[in-house]
Image (cartoon, rainbow, N blue to C red; front, top):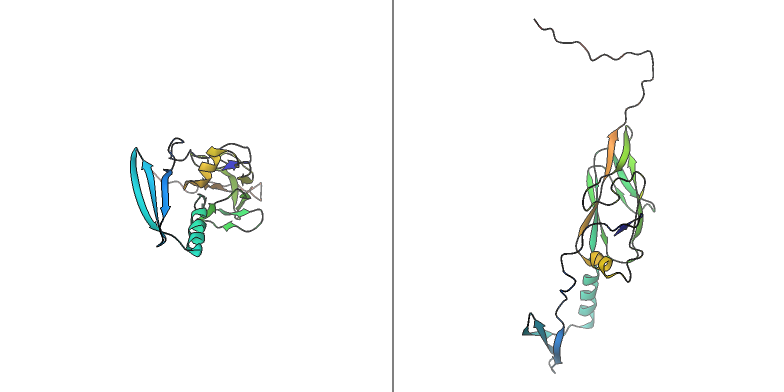
Length: 190
């Protein structure tokens, strides 16, 4: 996922670029709708026999595979909430809310909204955290991922990225400039 500033977020997925899923060497289908597929795995031929799926079963399997992708966890501490610009997402104080990022059309801007008595003091900075150190809304988009194998691999991974605002207690100015605040009575020492 990229932040509005264009930087990559998180780490590369665990799979090495040279490690691809084994390609079928030979595939045959018999009259009883059984498919036998021979794969070459680490130099050894492996035979796998499967029943063919119905069209509905195949569509369900494809849909489930399409739902895999990276996640965005929005962790909101005491002192406010996080909302999306379009209003479709709200994560309240003391909650962690998850968003599945599964396609090339993800484009959201998140704003930290402090509660009364608090101020937003920026997005938390840490490995795997997005928009770290920024003090304005956090714009996240998968635009530009298409055609970039490293970004597509990250999008297809099961990696979780974090967005966490920091809220601080707001110290309001004293309404009466003539008021003197003292620390209170001091204990007597003998």
